[in-house]
Image (tube, rainbow, N blue to C red; front, side, top):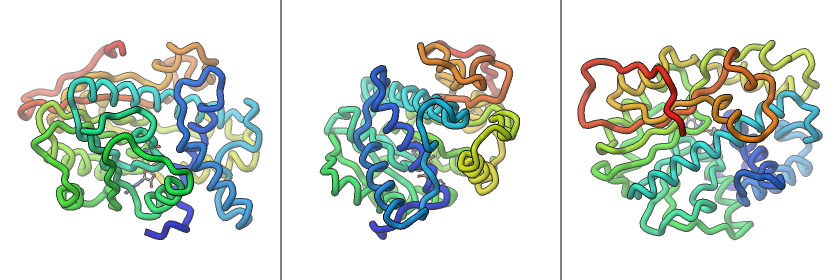
Length: 314
Ligand code: SAM
């Protein structure tokens, strides 16, 4: 791992997520506090100003609510973080002690959720992202509350080998988190990943993830009204990382891989329940949204697919 390299390409999306979590942590009405995110932003911005534009901007130039794109992103990232946090804490309460972060990026859950010392967090991502994260952890003296194992891997490839070599136990229940990941995968890649995860999952394991409900288009973000830098961010996200939207509802997708949906909501639905100002894109149930879901591994293949008609309340 080269610890001096700032993640670019899809690795940059982790920096953007950290930027949003750092801003959330500064709010008086913050929903969580993420010291690692603040450290990531300080380091990345330091390198950015020292090396002149090596990094795309992490967020809007001013975080004063004037960027429609950033209002949308920060609402999305903050609420999804809360959704995943609640699922992690539930699983830990239920006795799960093995967590795998697929596309871990700058996820700080091993540092900020007070996970018990008997739990192990496996963090899988590209070597460049993990290397940069390691450098920040050392610089800022951040220490996890439980054992943490990092694994450089391409998640479109086999994952069993590196996990097993690192002490992963397929006979133990696992909490798998694929946060902000599947939108960078084609449907076929996502299917292969879930197949591989399923083969490594004991009954009672959880798979928590998200998926766009439909393709997001220029008009959904009022592209014409965005400033040049926000347009560049949108272009990067939509052109450089084209993905397929999920062809099924998450409940059906999970069932076709032997999982039962436990919770399925959307960022809009989840976010509207908070007291925050809701960006127009999430104010109604009409437009494209993002599914947030939690599946549990059953004890055998399902004979028929169960369609989730109404969302279980959280
Ligand atoms: N889950 C983290 C979070 O929510 O803070 C990071 C989310 S970030 C939007 C997406 C992450 O997925 C990046 O760190 C990126 O490097 C990683 N990623 C995307 N495709 C990957 C692949 N094929 N193999 C490994 N990591 C990948």
